[in-house]
Structures are given as C-alpha cells and as structure tokens.
Length: 328
Ligand code: UDP
Image 1 (cartoon, rainbow, N blue to C red):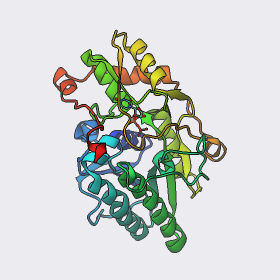
Image 2 (cartoon, rainbow, N blue to C red):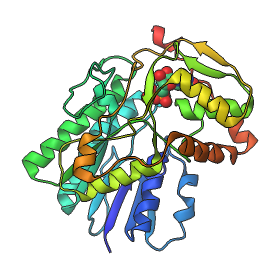
Image 3 (cartoon, rainbow, N blue to C red):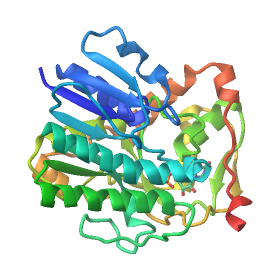
C-alpha cells in the first residue's frame, strides 16, 4: 500500500485531497496545525484504518515514521484576509515549511508536489496567464507575504530537484471553490454566499470590473492527481479558464440564491489583480486534463453546502474591509 503525507490536510483543498487518496487506496497521513484548517473537514476519515492525523506545524522539523511514497504540501493560509492577519506564518510555511518537506522528501526518497498559486503572476500584464509569464508582483504589498513565499517555494523546489535530484511537481492553482471553503475566509464566493444566507447586501470591491475564473474543487483535485502521477517537473496551471467579472458574478449569485439582495460597493483592496484567467494548454497537453464542472453546477453544490451550516456558524463571519489597514 502506498503512503502519502498531506500537509494542510484539514483545509479546504487538503481535505478533498485526503478523500481522493483514501478512495484511490492509499495510506494517508494528514498533517495540520489548524491555524486556518478545521478538523470537521476530515473527521469523517478518523475511523478509517488507513488514515492518521498529526497535529503539527510544518515550519518545525517534520518527522514521519517509516516509508513514504508521496508528499503533497498544501499547508498555507490562502486568502487575502488570512495573509493580513497572519503574515509571518504565511511567509514561514511557504519558505521554512517547504524546506522541511523537501528535506523529508529527500530523506524518504518520496515524490513531492508543492501547491503554488496564480498569485505568483501578481497583477498580471499578460492575459491569459501562461506558465512562461514571470509575473508582476509587489514584494511589499499586503499580498507580498503570500506571493513571495510561493515564489520562493517554487525556487527552492526546483533547486532540490536540480541539485538533489528529488522528484518534484509544482501546481499553480487558480481560484478554486466548493464545499468546505471557510465561510469567513473573506474570499468572494463564501463572502457572497454568506451574505445571501444572512439576508445582507453583496459587497463588491471596486467597480466589479475585475475578473476571476473559478474552478470547481473536484476538477482541481483531478488535475493535481494527474500532475502528481505525471513525470513533468515544471509548473503547471490548474484552473478553469471561464472568466467572469465580479459584478456579473454577483448577479449570478443573487439569481442562484433566489434572494432579493442588492449589491453595494466598497473600496478595492490594494494590489487586487484586475484580471485572472489560466492558460491551460499545458495541462491539456501533458495531463489530458480540463475542467468538467460548469459554474452553475459547481455553485449550486457549493451553496447547498453553505446552507447546511448552522445559524451560529453563519453569524460568526467577519467582514473583510481592507480600506483602513491598507492606508498604512
Ligand atoms: N471581492 C468582492 N467582494 C467580497 C470579496 C471579494 O468584490 O466580499 C473581490 C476581490 O476584491 C477580488 C475578487 O472578488 O477582486 C476575488 O477575491 P478573492 O478574495 O476570492 O480571491 P483573489 O483576489 O485572491 O483572487
């Protein structure tokens, strides 16, 4: 039986990856420090013989007993509200956490896949973004702690590959959504859905002309799975190229949730990318992958999940308003 270590296992993507690798017949070792993750995302796996959970912060030395075949490094805060709240941890997990896991991969002779992000492209000047684009990142802006940690993560991963010959994979994840997103992570989908469920107006940041392209979690997991199993070592974009403006997206959410909310406008956060859309030619060619789940179907499934949350959970949500902190 193959053994896989998944860091950030109690998070949104990490927990879906745990499900997938359990389904594929792996022994899954889940690791998380629960700064942004939540055990309720993986508690359904606790009774399984081939699932173990370690509460651990991967910026500290990582020890796993016995053999290990694969490592998926998905531990990191991943939303703008989190980088503002825990900027140092964000830098550390991308830099020191990745270093520890690469060391573990070397020690165990394991193949390691690193979760990178479309944020390495910053506020892109090339559209759609291909893997060859170097990016337009503000090192000292509010997103810099995430963007630069992820860029360093890619560099050290390639260095371990080239210098130590370890098997590495790098996925550049574009906006991904689905059940188990954290309601209060400040991202646009949980924000709009939470607002709809609480009967509040939907907050659009800026004039809503900025674009995003949203990928359903099952498609993302399939892309990651195929990349891990491939022999391709350079970064690969995984995301859905179907682009929409945030303003049009708000209208879609209002229609989907059947509410009669209005949209209200708030200041655009600093360094908020104006447009984002993956070029997925490489994933198509190398992995034979493309997304299958359309936005309507994916959003319906995601809204069904948010509807299962209790009233108390819905009320816990805090609002993300960057206007004050960004003035500093
Ligand atoms: N956004 C918005 N209202 C919200 C939350 C986000 O208009 O309540 C905007 C945000 O400014 C950005 C887009 O939606 O332009 C996507 O934001 P998200 O935080 O989901 O992801 P990212 O900016 O990292 O792509």
